[in-house]
Length: 235
Image 1 (cartoon, rainbow, N blue to C red):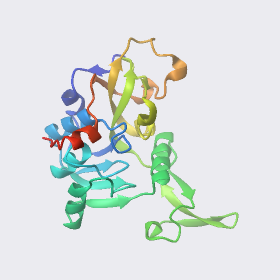
Image 2: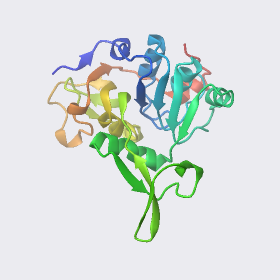
Image 3: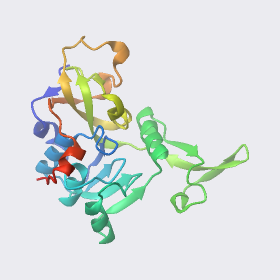
Image 4: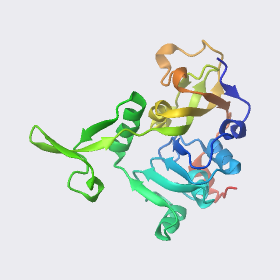
């Protein structure tokens, strides 16, 4: 039952070319920077990445994109604080983009984790985002059918974790991480503090260990915004 691994590099070593990878975070909040950088070092190509935004600066997701490892990005907010890397590549035709409204993205991921193949939402009806999707009327209002979203791997960041994979989160870092943990075939969590099995109050566990496959201890995680203020570049 011990799901701990010794390093971020070991945790992501088997992510292959062409994999679909969910990456937690809302901007820098809850973004698993160390796991993303380990994925860059591992070098898989042609990835489909699911994330709330398109990365900032030259670290984290932006760095993964800059290294040419992402073929498609599924996100809700591609124009964030400093999305230069993604914007230039997209305008040059070097990366595919699927825009999903933020609430719809969260629900698609939640549905994927819950085994729900599709659901209806009024969001995007009558816009280009609804083109080609089934629509239906409920109680006099038009709705768009959206499909549940799953991934091969999820990279997430938690505050505390035990060897069985039970996780807690720090404040807003909770964001997309818990739902992504449920929607991937393999969930990899970096945690700031590893505690003994039984030390976490069950009432405080947000992600039960059944959804987590690997836990790696990252005691002093880097923060995207701080790295960008330092004009850091990875690798």
